[in-house]
Length: 225
Image 1 (cartoon, one colour):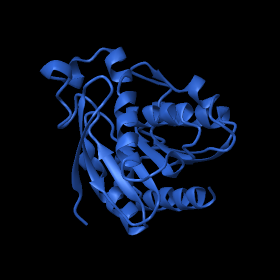
Image 2 (cartoon, rainbow, N blue to C red; image 1 turned 90 degrees about the vertical axis):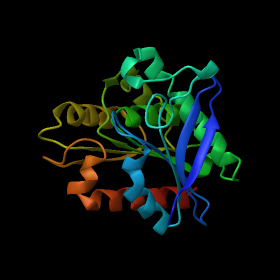
Image 3 (cartoon, rainbow, N blue to C red; image 1 turned 90 degrees about the horizontal axis):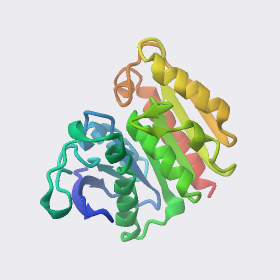
Image 4 (cartoon, one colour; image 1 turned 180 degrees about the horizontal axis):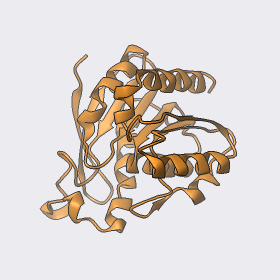
């Protein structure tokens, strides 16, 4: 299935570009890329979500891909961002959720899958939105550009689910981070460490079963809501 172009503005005036893959089911997944990737890095996984009845919205975080237009026409480039500017990407997720809400998808039917800094941002959004039942964090870190996950993990509600994955050998920082976060989470959770699997969405290439497991868990969690 072909994606539809999605363009919407954040509360601070950033124009966010996305690829929207609509499906007939009630659930939808917001997909958050790693640096220096963009929304296209999620295409195969988004199609898998579609095949399983989920809509998907892959966005270019501010300063990446086609999301380079800020308030007043300011040109955004993530390579020139301060940590604070990276942290403001949470507003891109809020705007993505609003986009889905306009299409009748309620917050309790929205899940998030993020890679690297996208994983950290996904956990932050899930912490701020207790109705978001599921997130999958691919190669999270304890601190990516000031998005710190340890305090977030301690705030996740008991009714939420967090899946963590990391590439083991060759991806040591993310692996150690995922293991620590798994220990801090007081909710339904699962962790998968795959030695030599790479970082973030690259893990899907060497381990196709990872994508299958994320979809399986996602379906189980949302069906129970």
